[in-house]
Image 1 (tube, rainbow, N blue to C red):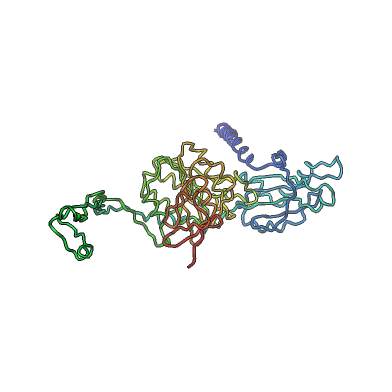
Image 2: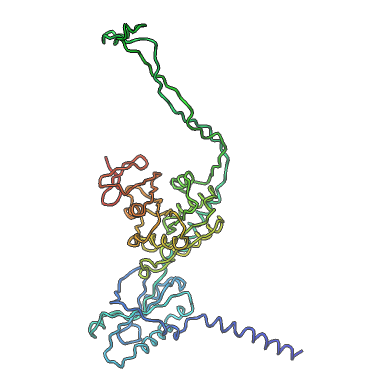
Length: 457
């Protein structure tokens, strides 16, 4: 019995040993970090910016000058990236930069070891190239920069998602009777009255008429009769209408527009889900509840401008935060949107709209048109990539009041798409010139300097 227990213990240790090694290997080692390739930059500026923690070190030293900003980190799980910064300049050719970097990592581990325990944290090394003299190199920043994620307080995020869920769950269908509507086509028919008009104009104006033509001198009198025929009949049927709790929203213009329009089977829907878009994202899901046929081909994309990536790391064309739902299942699309919202809410105001469109067309090359649902208050940071888009992009613009953002006008003009804003569809905008006026929800807007501005009378 004792022999069996001993062997059982031995077997358990043999079994758990590799697992223990696997778990311990998940930590980030300094040896791993030493293999990172340095990225050459000019000079790293030290700018007080939310979400940037500076841990300075002297030139050619591994000792920290100040680590007080570590107290500004709310939680280790808020860390996105750790950057080691140094200068290429060296006083003597024999100076060993890798050795100094190694000891800098060692000292970081001593003062803040948790960053080496989370494998989701990204690591980078910046090598400053601009300084060519010691005097300039000493003035440069050396040490570590810790970049925090661009994410809202979890309480706020959960509150918004809960609100969205409440509205969506309140949705219910009902059949309503649509009365028959008849459109008439009116024809004007010219008929003879059997009478003749006097040659004398005064008599004619007095209404005098004759039964004879008097040797053909009097003209025949004609009267116009209207004849109506049915041109079109619509209605007289039961239709599905969706009802939901609208008390949370100021309006549901986007939802009403989406459900009343026919959309292409090969259209991809690309939606901004950053912080301000919660009411509109909710309406998109309600649209899919009401019109499940839109789900048939399953081309939905939700983008959040970088998945909580710090603004300083965002690059035009490779910001990320783009989530695809290639599914005809409502639940699958909803979960993708939920995941995209939880992954990040944007950070800086401009968004990576064009990157999201390009990635969408790469994912589904046979897409014939893109419907972008965007925030009027958020400019397009990667508008320079617009020339790469080779399909029409229509934009449903949310939150517009006094001005229509010029970036979205440009997107629709360049790609040949349409602009849906304030319950109005605008097309052929390539023909617009300065001073062109349009009416949006009964209000006059004027096109100037690339944007639509409400006219004041």
